[in-house]
Amino acid sequence: MRPPRRPAWTATLTWKAAVFIAVMCCALAALLGVLVHVSVTSQTVNDSREKALTRLTEVGRLYEAGEPLPRFAGIDPPGLPAPLRALTARGERGTMVADDRGRPTMWAAGPADGRALAVRVDYTQSAETIDALDRSILGSSVLAIGATLLVGAFAVTRVTRRLHLTAQVARRISAGDLDARVDDPRTKDPSRPQDEVATVSGALDTMASSLQRKLQSEQRFTADVAHELRTPLTGLSAAAELLPEGRPSELVRDRVRAMRGLTEDLLEISRLDARNETVDLAVHELGPLAERVVRASGTETEVRVVRDATVETDRRRLERVLGNLVANAHKHGAPPVVVTVDGPVASVRDHGPGYPAYLLESGPQRFRTESGGKGHGLGLTIAVGQARVIGAELVFVRPAEGEGAEARLRLPEYVRLTDTDPED
Image (cartoon, rainbow, N blue to C red; front, side, top):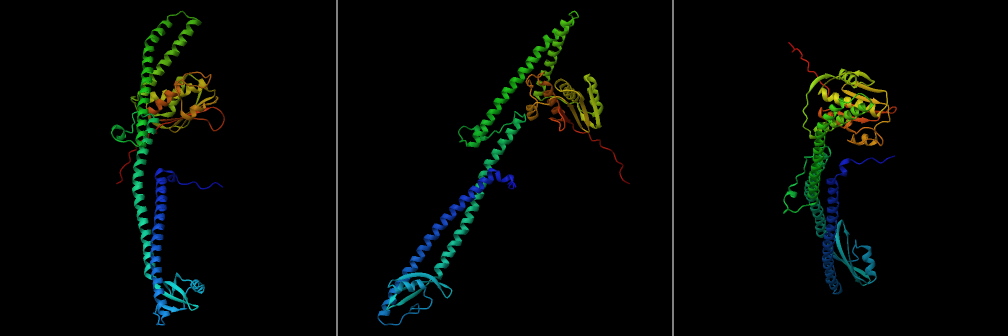
């Protein structure tokens, strides 16, 4: 049987710091309390012992002179502790704290003609003083621990709040928001001393700026290359059309079309990377739209409409997403390829070897395919980018039954507002 799992909050730095502070405060309070208690108790007992021994000496002189003894003294008095009786029997003197009729008493006893001469000193006030001191130590320790916990929790919370902000910015950067920065004020003023959190925040901001510059440089390079290739490819395409019919000219035209498609994909990716695309929203029926995409693809693809749905989306971009998914299924998968519409979810399923492991874990990556695979990895990258633009969720999964690959596109469903007649 597995042990019960601890709550998640027990793993936080605030909780661990609070436990550490509480344990250290308790240990320090206990140590100081014990030292103070031992010191005061020892001093109080010594004072009472000296007082009792002084009285015993005076009473001894009275006993030797044959004078009557005071009320606090006596020979073999009742209530005398047995250890003191045994001590006087050996001819020695001693003191001991014990109860006498329910009251704490300091006893002092010595030998007197084979018997025990003893005196009593009321120890009640001293015992009450020690008890009051113990209560004061306990109360002040509780107050000190509480105050220390409050101050420590406040200080630790300030640090953890900055750490949470740094983690939040890191997550935003990993999600694609390269403009996100921590902007810790301690990192902007070189004259201010920096703690470890400020150092981490500054390193994260520096890394984000460097990454942003690198990605922007790559995006500009991709866009510039695509634009530069576009003009010569247009001329090359026109020249290819003038070639005489034959196998060589067909090969040239096929390669020119492939290069033009790659160039257009690069331009589209550069626009998606810039994140300044505008969306032309309209209301469409998802089933007929999926059938139109399949007809335009010219492939043998089955369309199954389990439950049609009305969606509000950009038709051109949605057709681009579905078209790329269908093309990828035929290019890298195996028939039959099935497009299924079930409410606002459109899925594309093939029966090939399935998506590579890296794609299932982190999504498609441009210019990366499986070893020996065909293509440049741009089709699925564009599909993911266009899906994000229209507010849809595109996920790649391995089907639960059988082999193959499945891409699921979930669109925001359009809800019609119906007018109702007001009640009379």
